[in-house]
Amino acid sequence: MQAKTVTVKLDKHCYDIIIGPNLIAQTALQIKRSLHQKDFHQTRLAVVTDTNVASLHLDTLQTELTRNKIHAVPIVVEAGEQSKSFSTLQTVIDKILAARLERGDSVIAFGGGVIGDLGGFAASIIRRGMNFIQIPTTLLAQIDSSVGGKTGINSRYGKNLIGTFYQPRCVIADTCILDTLPLRQFRAGYAEMVKYGLINQPDFFEWLEKNGQKIFSNGPMRTEAIVRSCQFKAHIVARDEYETGERALLNLGHTFGHMLETATAYDSNRLIHGEAVAIGMTLAHQFSAQLNLINPTLTHRIETHLKAVGLPTQLQDIPGKLPDAETLMTLISQDKKVSKNNLTFILTRGLGQSFIAKNVSPEAVLTFLEQKLAKIR
Image (cartoon, rainbow, N blue to C red; front, side, top):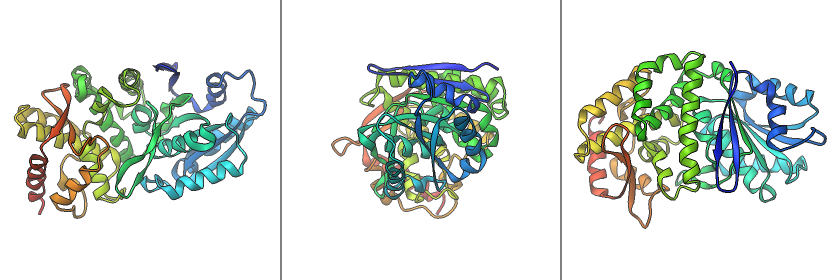
């Protein structure tokens, strides 16, 4: 199967997302193209990855780089959301500086969303900006977090509150690498795929309802779904690179989702990002129904599809105890979409009719959360 390319066209920068099988073996060529190099003489880079990806794929990548005389410094951090922290960022920065990598050298983020956010943030601030290349190894990263230039780490006050917008030079999405992804992680990425349909692509959601199970096996349906997802996000990012307007729609499910991730202390045994988004999207539609914006049957339809692929949809699907509603409201108040203390949610008026709802009533949200928590007390 031939690789496909999606181009992200921004005002001051364009880059390609290359999607297809066995692309790790072409990494050197793609680096050469993205950096506009004639050869690999003195090409140096850092490969930021995590323990899980390193054990499975780092040797393959390093062999490819060494074969092409590219000097690579591997930086391996612990797998998991906890690595999106100041302490891990400091470790990555120290190792890059200790290796004497320069501003014209590159940082490769070789991993999932956590590694992309962490590696990209480091690249954006070291020497005021190094070249950055994404090699996403999870479905979620290939269709979402590697596209659009968001980087950053978490704070004790909430998720993704510290970071930058920093676009990569290219994204290399090897679809075969997803074969080693645990099913739970693949499902988490699928939740973000569903999100695109629910935002304003109802035909894509209906296509997923028919073909969703086929995406879980490597083949043309998987590649098509990844390409369509990247095209959709690239289109929105091109129109709103810095999230001052419609790009906020991409946060459908994320206000409730980030609240839940923070409430569970980013404990992957309880909840991972895509699962939080699945629950968050369900809650966003249920809240929309409570506000009489949609018919509750739409919420049931979405929940049915998410459940069909094994994703959680309700608060009771999260192991362990959750904080009370007022504590959850405090977490929501730290959401990055909050402006002048006014709550902003992504809600919906129908299938594929999501919109940015500003000045949402805190009392209405609190009552909604109290009702949901009452069902699991």
